[in-house]
Length: 566
Image (cartoon, rainbow, N blue to C red; front, side, top):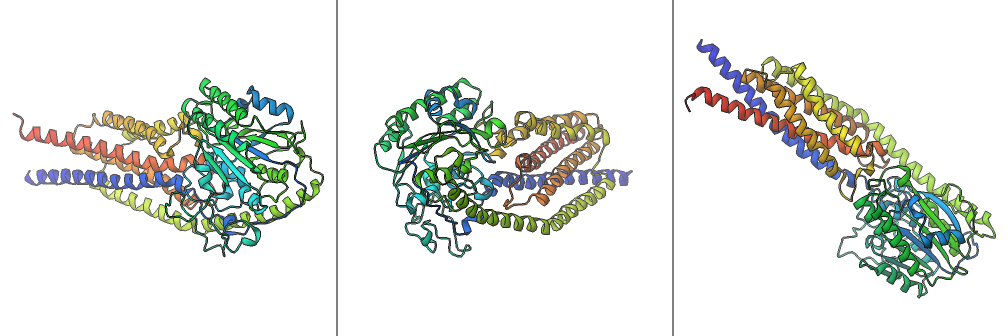
């Protein structure tokens, strides 16, 4: 009798120890997963992409200047559909070209500012999110204008744009092509943080006006029209702010578009379209509920309006993209296109006397830039494939060790895998969590963020709900297990199975999509990769909560048995 009691006490002690160990392991796993999930968006960034390590290919087609001045207006967040019935934009359409352009994935703002001003899309520019915080070392419209001794100005209510294109004060080894970018031998190139107070950098704009106050954009824009800059870039952010706050289908979004149209009209009131050209576009649109980053049509399709000198009124555009704007502006100014660009001149929209010269220059540039990008992509893909077997071996090895541990614990009766309980409790988290992402996360799209922020933070909100549902399901199913040690052993089984599934899933994600992300994952995987990291954290938390509650119940009942009168 005494030996039986001793064995029972020993078994109970082992169950409790196993529960505590699982709580500790779950906590450590949650910390690691939270760290990985929150760093994911930063891991997408490439500060030294292949193009930035290569001298730009500058080809001067020597075509004549078509416009005295070019005004490039970017309305942040304005979708193509919502750009109509705006008086000033519609007037420009009537006098010039009414077209649409495709944004580039990921359809965030900073990546597509770079697309517009350098002709390099996010996949090749390395600027993939709005968290990019280093200077963009790609040849830009501003660099080309300065190379031709032209002046460049900026008016904006959003201060990040000029900071993205800061430059060293003196050109380096690439000085002969007037980039102002020290490319060196490629390996020595170091991007500089735009937040570094001790950096020795200068503005890419001869006159940059940041006016965040109401009406400031129109005021600063009008002031620049009265000056002599050859290229004036204008960026207004009110529409994007309304889209994030209220959604693309909201009256507030429409009102913000109307307000931006009026501000642009005031800013450009004195522009002479007989001598100057105006181009209006956007970096991305918005979903109906607000958000962007994915490839939804309403996000990817943006207006492209051209009017004034050098523009063919009513001309149709052929598959225009944001990366085509930089070489088109260059053609209007009669200067070479940015030498890292992957876009083409929209010569069908321009009154070019020698279109063949621009097309030839584009082709020479594109041969070089496409070759650079293709080689980098191939190297990255090869590197991933070469190490995939090692990563898979680590994942499968870890899973095997976890299974062996579970078998040992199962034989010692400290971990129970009850099929009926697992069939109810395991789906409780995964179905709720991924169901919420699919439903409220706009079908696993990066556009799930209604406002600027971390994707992992938004996913964590869905994970918390899923974890709460599973904790409740766990406690409901465990209530029918009478023995205290059996109940805690079953709780250990639930915790082990939940974390096992989450971690193995995350392991396979890591094996097939490891950082650094030279080859950017597609929209679905851009959500799923941080989602599985968040799932580990939430699974660990719910396991810890379940085991914690069970340990409290276990201790309370044990105390009650020892002290029934209290």
